[in-house]
Amino acid sequence: MNGTRVRLRELLRYMRGRVPLLVLAAVLSLVGAGVTLLQPLLVRSVIDAISASRPMAGPASLLAGLLLGSAVLSGVRDFLLRRTAEKMVLKVRERLVAHVLRLPVAEYDRRRTGDLLSRIGADSTLLRLVITSGLFELATGGLMILGAAVAAILVDPMLFAVTWGGLVAALIAAVLVARRTRPLSEQAQARLGEMASGLERAIAGARTIRAARAEGRETRVIGRSTRQAYESGLRLAKLQALVVPVAHIATHGVFLLVLGVGGARVAGGALSVGDLVAFVLFLFFLIMPLGQVISAYSQLQTGMGAMQRVEDILNLPTESAHDRHDTERAVLSEPVLGEKPPPAITFDRVTFGYGEDRAVLQNVSFTVPVGGRTALVGPSGAGKSTLLALAERFYDVDSGAVHVGGTDIRRMSRDTLRAQLGYVEQEAPILAGTIRDNLLLATPGATDVELMAVLGSVNLAGIAERTPLGLDAEVGEGGVLLSGGERQRLAIARTLLSAPPILLLDEPTSNLDARNEAAFRQALAAVSAEHTLLIVAHRLSTVVDADQIVVIDAGKVVAVGRHDELTSTSPLYRDLATRQLLIV
Ligand SMILES: Nc1ncnc2c1ncn2[C@@H]1O[C@H](COP(=O)(O)OP(=O)(O)OP(=O)(O)O)[C@@H](O)[C@H]1O
Image 1 (cartoon, rainbow, N blue to C red):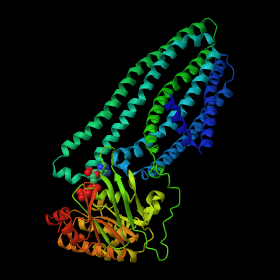
Image 2: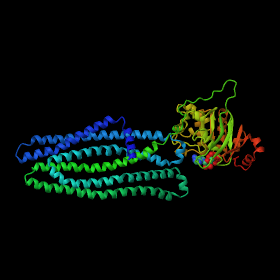
Image 3: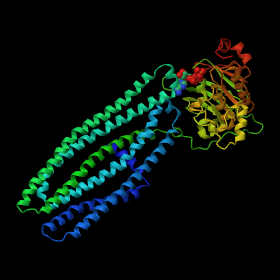
Image 4: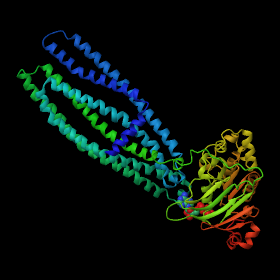
């Protein structure tokens, strides 16, 4: 009950700003219901006029006019409602997209992409049901039933009492079904989300899945969710199939009863033929919207279920909502004249774990001086990439602090922090789109000359000269139309273009061929010349001339120094270098 109230409040929030249109639609509905309920009375006048051989042209033409009027009114009302509902779906989708793009990175680690997509696509569409079928049909149908019942009572209370039992039976059956609808349709939507996740995984991993000849198995796994959605739908259909006969018997029985008892009352002179026809028509207007109200109630439940799934996402705190200091303007420490500038980055006794169970980094302290190259080396899983993620503040440290330019990064807005840092992931993520789209990601205003210059600096000008499309050539989903080395250098070019003072680079572990390797070195040299570079290094050639090497093992700093020093002082480093854990 409490949950329903909360959702109704949310619903009202979605409708904010659209109240005038909804009120207009409500007024049109009211007028429409009134016009419809006048029709039986006019029919009665026409019939009674014919029976008494009186002229009937007046009431007959009024009846025709009313019919036309109510048709036009219902058309206008439906359009207004659909428009309002579409607008609501638009607003919810806009909010969902903006919200999903601002969720903390850890949230993406936990969730399936397909499920998020399905909530944005399918569930937001179902929300439309809440307004159109749900609220309005429920309200107008309810109004119609009430009006028709009152009118029927006025025509003949005794005949109405006879019909009452059948109507109540039909109503109870309908409410029972509607109550089961919501959990079943929620189940079906959740299964559809799983199906979308499965498909997303299968398409993203298409090559691996083909190579492993696993299409059949993947199809079966995805098929399971589809089948479960079908089963929920089927259970719903069975439930509804049970109710239809009950409603059918109840409503048809009521009509037969009315005709029988009413016929006897006409014969006895208690009612005129016109009265009986008017009563039957009122009964018709009472029973007809009953079906509408029942299905509207089920649809309202379906829409509310979808709303719950949408709200689940909207209620997740965004990245900056986790953050008490984000509203403060960042005050980056300005170096005082004659004073040594603060280090570019300082990790100060940093301890961090992704979950509660295990610390990935323990008490890590080191500084990255301004200018030059600091390389992070260590065995796989030691925590090197995690250090870059902490500097970008994708996650917050559990204890200790990270400082950038002398300021604790929790004391600056994420925007300010990320403007200081460029970040190139290990598996350079190239976005589907053109070379230009990719380069402009962080620097939307760059000119073509600047784009070509930055491509040249990482030895990549050639990719813009391969096709007549130049910078507008597509790179494919995830950059599949480029080689691994080209992807990495395009990602570096993209980051260089935004000219951040500090660059965080996760070196690719993949073996590059000699030409790509040379090009990568050249790109690194271009980066090192103008930026402070913190690089997770997998290649000996990256570390031999680094200004500082930090050796990490199992989440701890075990040695810091230059290549020559470390080869004599750090057994682990020597081991890494000589056993070629660092690629030569
Ligand atoms: N998003 C994440 N959620 C949970 N655990 C993670 C996540 N990312 C990394 N880990 C875990 O944290 C540990 C350190 O990972 P990290 O990627 O920092 O290592 P690394 O030293 O960069 O390794 P590599 O050289 O193989 O890239 C690993 O045990 C890894 O399983």
